[in-house]
Image (cartoon, rainbow, N blue to C red):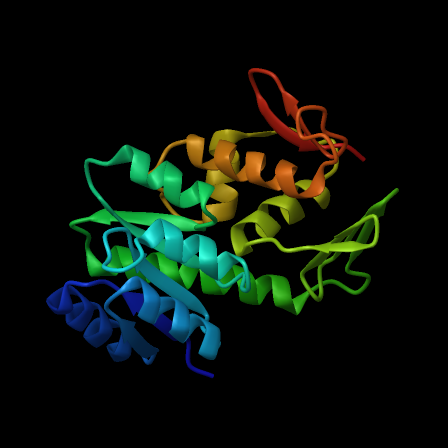
Length: 228
């Protein structure tokens, strides 16, 4: 089945170029030119990935990302202005999985899309047992679901991938650089704050007291690990 992508940008020439290039790779592409149209399309359709610009009419990209996260865990790649480092952090804080800075090379965008789709597909192949349990924590690798005290937790693709790596390698400490390489799966041009943001968001979702975590711990000066 073809990868289905939603491209959201108010610059029609950019959208046209991205759409043409992705379709050359056999992907199905829908387009939206403002924030409300993006939200409506995301509600009405099932996408494999969304490319979302920050600067949009009606609702900006951060608002769109936050709204989509209220009903979907579809991977979202933010398109940010090159100089605005804060845009990258805000995008991740609002639930984005990744970001690409403008102006960008379309080959880089396609590499990001394929890396996320490949990792999601690999996770979907799954292991025989496929379940990790620890006290009130249950992670089903086959269905990509996490339950804390019986309540399902809605994770983004990158949040799940990060948690899966840590939980399937309990007590192994990963540096932030190693996590960037393992989870993002390519020569990531961002910095280690990307990992910090995702760990913080994970803790907010799975920990009763994020400042005193039971599951994801920090090894000061080194990195993060999952407590078995």
